Image (cartoon, rainbow, N blue to C red; front, top):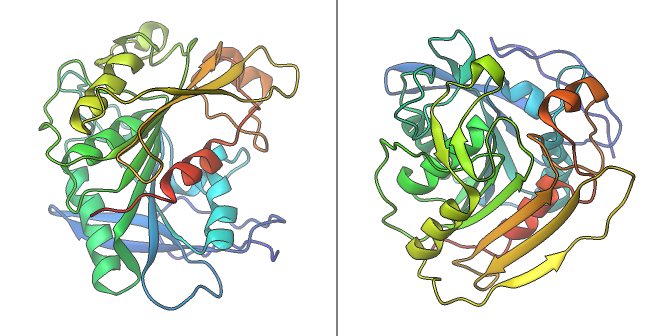
Amino acid sequence: MKSRRWIVGSSLPLMFAASCGFAAAPEPHRIDAAGERREYLLVTPESAPSGARPLVLLLHGHLGTAANALGGGSSPSPLSAWLDIAEREKVLVAALQGLKGPDDRTGWRDCRADADDNPRVDDVEFAARVVKTLVDAGRADAKRIYVMGMSNGAMMTLRLALEMRPAPAAVAAVAGTMATKSDCTDAELPVSVLLIHGTSDPLVPYEGGSVGLGESRNRGSVVGVDVTRDYWLRADGLQSAKPVEHSFPHRGDDPTRAREVTYGPDTGPQVAVITIDKGGHVEPSKRFHYGALYTRIVGAQNGDIEAAEQAWQFFAPKRRP
């Protein structure tokens, strides 16, 4: 594949970089939404077939950036695997940039009514405007809109599943669950949901509770993975669906293990949970590994699966009616 080049010309925190293995190049875009000038990076595959393509929205975590999510910086996020997926599968990928909240750090206004540091902006409108712009231009397929987010971005992903119109066909939330005290509306349409979460996550507890780390454990509260799963099973009419269980082969010497439970057909509606036993607050990845200092803080990183690839496998057969 060709090397990847960053295109500079936006206030997004981009940098020049080159990396073997990536062909699609992120390009900065600006859009007005709910009275704010917002920014995102758009990845367009080379030699894509004509006509509307599937679109994946990516949401970085609290403190993160769209650029880092797509490979910028010294330690690229595992979400940057979407660059390869975009080129291979000929899909559009839009990494959205969150704004700063009262804590002067970037993030998203997800459903947590008790998260005082979340930005006071309409991120649902922002995401919807990006989708509408690309759909109206004939570039994105309105029936094949997908969303993936990490941490605060995962919680925002679940808000988009509830409130964005057109509703996404499927979403994937990594290390993020639904709010205990929610200011979001309930789901009106079925949305396929994939949850990926570590049982030893110190920031967003697998069983639910306060969000944050140490003295900073004051970023609102969330319900657990099982409660979030059950919400979407009800919303998608899958209460009686028989669970299908699968354990992934283990690789490496980390203490984690990955297993999946799926409810419903591949074409959707479908709910799936990938549990990372002993996993921390980090995206599982075979290729992109965080350093020992980082994982000492957030917990162990699983290397049995590539989170982005699992999300694409989940998304690919889903269509909005």
